[in-house]
Length: 432
Ligand code: SF4
Ligand code: SF4
Image (cartoon, rainbow, N blue to C red; front, side, top):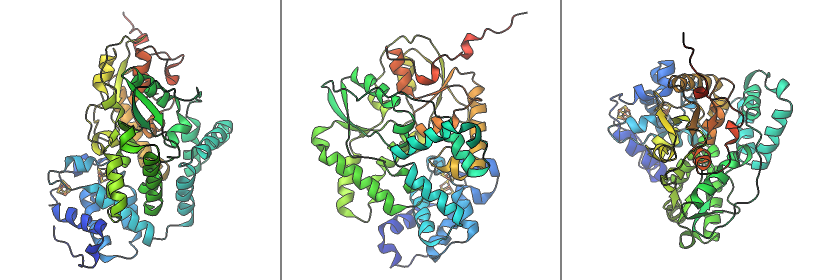
């Protein structure tokens, strides 16, 4: 595709990357059918090809975009299903990231939206604040969850997080050291996931060491287009890793939420315009490991041989490009693993998307649950806290992280979501 950026604009390495990707797009439309918002809404402007046209126009012209452009770009989930489908190698992430940053810089949103986005950026990125908000939502659940609009959506999201027990620090066992990033939202909603991961990996000779002073990975800020904030979060994490000994001390770096993992892997691109930080970010990103690659398959016998529908978060399959998603390790641990039809489609969680775009997120959730329930699972497993929390509810099978299931099969505690639960495989079909 032809582009019309001026040479002066292309001095910016982010825009130079954008231009390269725009030129690679041949407008074939192969990506369109894989786009969740196009599948739902059937509007070219809500599919990748239409968005690419709008993004090119907006970035070439500069200045404030139209409300229409912002609406259709806001509806993008950043799921990157289109990037996986594209035969021309267009890196859609570069385009949408640069566009979100441009919108944040040049477009004045209505006051209500500005307040909401600011609340997400400042509240959900701080574990203490998230814990406080979840506590409030649970306390006032009968009223808060009935509120209309976004407040009600936020209250329902927070209130359905299961009450979690904290069980002390992760003990060092003296194995090969892996730096653990506790993150922000997961630390508040489900700290037991990291504890289960620590036990699973300890059995495989890894010693998880929580990285002090790391904080949030910045993915939420990044997806809101708040580039300076996203960079600050990233710098804090890279600096914490280096302070703790860096590549010389650690065999790897782990975060057990794939949404954060995919963003961490992208840190070098975030610093395209800061060469020193880019080099540091590359050293850090080279050490990243996903739980599914560290938890090598090991034979075990779970207390119950459950049927697991494996939900592969977009960040895992399209971001990190890890196809297995823990299936082999779960099967080795003694579970039956079944794939979910339309597994490539996003569940609608997508960071703060479920709060900012509740109708589309809700429709995608229903579609994902209908597909999952069609394979009659006892449990849905997902390695991302956003998906776990978004999909959970009275209409859903229990949602569990693969680390908790593997840990349970290998002698660890029963996952919180499975305590006292009646499983599909407990129910005997009526015989006439
Ligand atoms: S992004 Fe790729 S698949 Fe989509 S229209 Fe462009 S070239 Fe075709
Ligand atoms: S990132 Fe996802 S929602 Fe956005 S255009 Fe691509 S496929 Fe569609």
